[in-house]
Image (cartoon, rainbow, N blue to C red; front, side, top):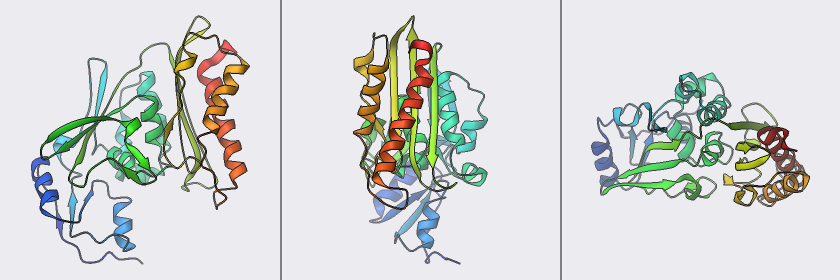
Amino acid sequence: MLYPPQINYERPESISEALSLLNEHSRPFLIAGGTIGVLNLKRRALSPDLVIDIGRLKELKGIDFRDEKYRIGSAVKIYEIIDSEFNGPGFSLLKKAASSVGDPLLRNMGTVGGNVCIGDPSNDLPPALLALGAELNIVGKAGSRNLNISSFYIGPYRNLLAKNEILGSINFAEPGKGYRWFYYKHYIRHLDHSVVNVAALAKVEGKKIDDLRIAIGGMSVRVPTLIETSWIKGITAGQEELQRVVKLASEKCLCLDDRHGSAEYKKNMIEKVTQMAFLSVVGGVL
C-alpha cells in the first residue's frame, strides 16, 4: 500500500482565492478529480508545499451551449460529458472520446480539465478537442487569456499552462448538421496507455470535401497532433488523397520500440487507424 507524505491542503471557495494560494507558494499543486495527482503523491513523485483542491469551485462547473458554442468548465467530471443531453456531431465526438476514458470509476472521479492538462499523450479528450478546434480559457491573477488547444502542448506531459494559472473552461463551436464524426482508440491491454487514438470530423458537399479534420494521439506520437488537411477542401477525394492523409499521419510518428510495441508496429497502427477514420467520415466519396 502506497501512502502520500504529510501535505498541506487547502480547498478554496473561489477562483480568486485559488489564484492567491498559487501565487503565495513556490511549489503548489492543483487537483480537481485527483485520479492521477493523488497517485503521484502516493508514489512520492511530487513534493508540493501546498495541494490546492479546486474540484468543487462553482466557476469551474457546468456545460453550457449558447450561440452554437459549448462552454465546459474544467472541473466538470468526465461522466457528465457522457450523460449530457447534447447530441450534435461535435459533442457526440467528445462523448465517444469521454466514454473511452479508463473505467466507470475513473470517469466518475476524473475531470475534463485534468484529462486535458496532464498532457498524457494517450489521453482521450485532447485528440477530440483538437479536431473540434477547441479554445482554452486560462485564468491568472492578472486576468484571463484564450489559447487554441493546438498550441497548448509542447511535449509529453508538458503544456503552456503557467505555474500560477488555472484552466477555467474548454470552448468550441458545434460544427452542425452534415458533419460525420469518428473516434477510435487502440491499446494492447485495457486501461493501458493507448498505442494510438484518432478523432475525425468531416463534411462532404455533393462529392467534394468541404471540411476534414483528423487528430491523433497515443504513445506513438507523444504529443496530440492535428493533421494538416486544409489542402483537401473542395476536392473529390480518391485513393490518392486517402494515401496522402495516411502519409501525413505516419510522418507524425515518433515511434520507439518499447512495451507498447515496436516502432514498426506503431507506425503501421497509425496508418491503419487513420485510414479507418478517413473512410468513416468521408463516406461514399471514394
